[in-house]
Image (cartoon, rainbow, N blue to C red; front, top):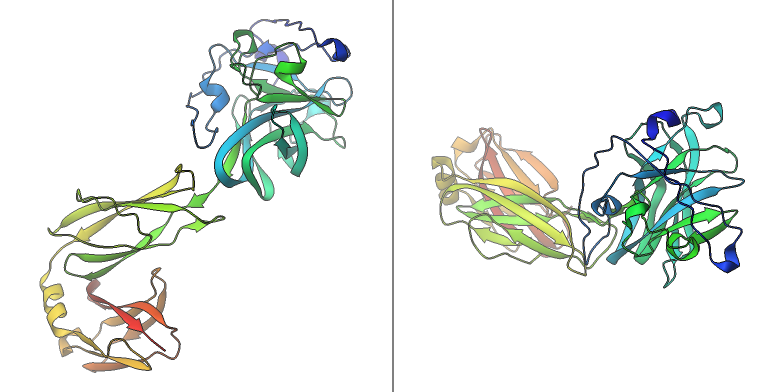
Length: 385
């Protein structure tokens, strides 16, 4: 991508540095033409991501070149989260010049830093070398080799790699219009030292167009039909952290349930959309998932609930299941409370089956009967060793 394609006009923004820093370079941001970014909004109490810099944009985005020897060699943006999380990568804009010295792919380095009370870069937390591609005006995701734990406040950066010197462009929102809102969230690296763009470059009021990919929880859940309108829901959310709260919406107008693995009974046969939202310790919604539960009262289900019996409960060394001959060809399914199938036993020509519990530990399980492609029976049992 040639520079001539990038520039609508040159805006020379000569800013004076503080008297103690007169050796800092003159910053020369240049507006990018034909840019139509999608705006999002800052989350006030949770995570400052989702194109936060773009959400403050009032004019064209700007670019400035990077140079390892004599100019800016790194750009960083500070962020705040409620509670704790993991940064798995960054989403950023990097424009690559077509000069031979800056061919694609370009090796750069992404890092996570601690920041101090002034939003200045402090200690390095972790870093990963990445391959940056020439994707034009589009953002690209650059991943860390493994998720990096962060709490409260931190900064993410993209920097030139000394082993692969080059001159790409980093992207900011419009400094000419003060789109940084004087929040002092951005920093730049010059000759190995970090400087706060607003404090150290005479009020350079902008944000770097990069954002962290925050990993908190990935919501998932399962459901077991207990018979009639009763269902057991079980959370199987994968998370790096603990201490989450849960909110279940069963889709029938009933109050939200905040237990992790609730049981709910529907009074009317229908299809219901069930949603689980998992939140972090500060109450920020981290992730949600929805699925449809079809409560249909069928002849097989009514018959099965009257004809199938499980005993003794609680089970110790075994439990017996009795059922009529018309369920021959079906299967008995035993699952744990998170929906994992532990055993699947064919119903051959017997009307009574004994299931040993030697492979089960003390706990709650679900015993279901599937027949002709339908789950006609499900019951929760307890095993006590």
